Image 1: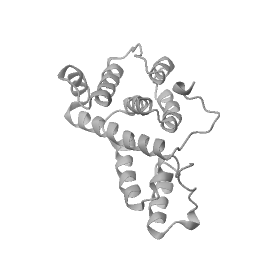
Image 2: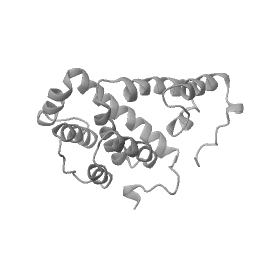
Image 3: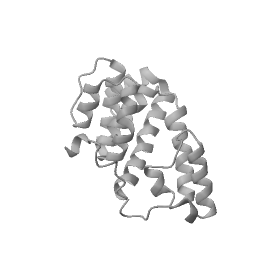
Length: 183
């Protein structure tokens, strides 16, 4: 992290320690990536973390489709750390490696599942246009319902926020991790 000093737990104020402890003891199991920057503002960090717990672990969008959507967001914003963190999870959730590779290169994947195509198209168009036409919305609404469509849209916003934190504060994955658009 070249734009912010490395945070040491011993140097955190009381509010930062509360946020740190909640993250470290929660589903994430540690404080890393964008949360290292977000801890600079304990208030923002705590609120973002709570939204993230819901989006990542509890929302109605199936985990496999969440991870596919996160890859689309990471690639769109060229957030290398986001890609590093989520490409392996997407693979474990059954997203085919050929789909992961195509998304990483900014190409249209050859999908074997309509659900994957619907989520991919929705996320890519939303990120590119800031809205989605009926022809792109309808398959997502049919797949996920109104609640799922709202939550998928929230996921795109949440992971865009994280991508911006990662990019602005130059939080990078380990240098040995291959990132598709870098190379």
